[in-house]
Image (cartoon, rainbow, N blue to C red; front, top):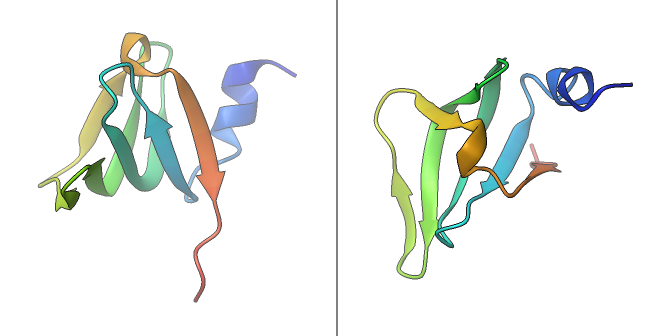
Length: 74
């Protein structure tokens, strides 16, 4: 199975995208494209705590070190 197909199966799941600048982004994965992924209800996870990101967060493929699917308690 290709990586893109695997990531595509994570749609509608909460994920954390770890980036090279040490700022991770958590949100609901709503789009998987060849050059980027799209998160809704996203927040940047910095040293000072989470910061809400307005609108959709579009994260280019080059800005992803790795992607983590997490379970959120109801």
